[in-house]
Amino acid sequence: MSFITRGFGGRSRERDDRLPPGQTLVHDFPVLSAGPTPEVDTAEWEFTIRTESGSQSWNWDEFMALDIDEVSTDIHCVTHWSKLGTSWRGVSLDTLFEHVETEYDYVMAHSYGGYTTNVPLDELLDGKAWVAFEFDGEPLDPEHGGPARLLVPHLYFWKSAKWVRGLEMMPSDEPGFWEQNGYHIHGDPWKEERYW
Amino acid sequence: MTHLDGNSLAGPLSEFFAFDVTVAVAKCEGCGSIAELARAMVYSSDAGSVVRCDSCGQVLMTLVESEDRAWIRFTGMGAIEVARTPTAG
Ligand SMILES: [Zn+2]
Image (cartoon, rainbow over all chains, first blue to last red):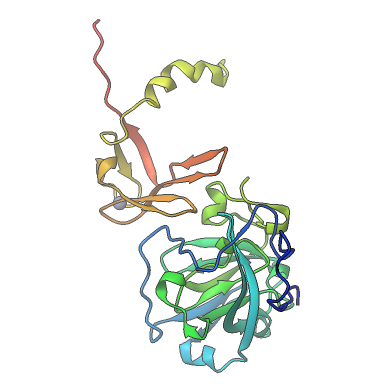
């Protein structure tokens, strides 16, 4: 795993080394939203991975029957806030991709409400990403992307698409919604890949 | 056909970009409705602003601002109509 949970003792140093450059620690969870909040009932929710040869879908009950991970991780928003040691439950993308065959190396995540974001496939595998449906022991509320959102904590948080409904495999890297509109195509907080 | 470089846009575009956005009119490429931008729905957040058609909800334009730069994109609208002050002649 690329992240490590450390104790909360001894944090009196001037700068926490878990904070990427240009970030400030917050303790609440700011909401970023650029459209109406989609209200998706878990009875209608479906998650689909689409490849060059077909697609694989899970409904809510099927999804809950998959292996579920407990995830503790830091998150970093492009608007300069970071939150350390957040806790989530979700299904690893490694688990989902066990059911998927593809030659393509790039992914477009699609959300209810129409938003998209792009991530290379190798940055979603090997314990680096989840489809998360619980935050801090509670079901993820719609404001924070519930019923389920992508969680890709090593990239800026706009890549952790709220209200995620599926992944589309692509042969080349194409920019998603915010990436077409000024944000960086990759979004590594340690390199400050915020904008073009 | 010969062409000029973009510097030649300075005159006409300075007039255009001084337009009063609230009375500018745009056509939504989603549903075709032609409406004043003042009627559009603006969803703002720290990440940026998304302007949507009030008839069909399609994204008309986006605005992203960083500390030292801003990006504007006319995603889903056709031509923009702006008012001009009539000149003599
Ligand atoms: Zn429209």
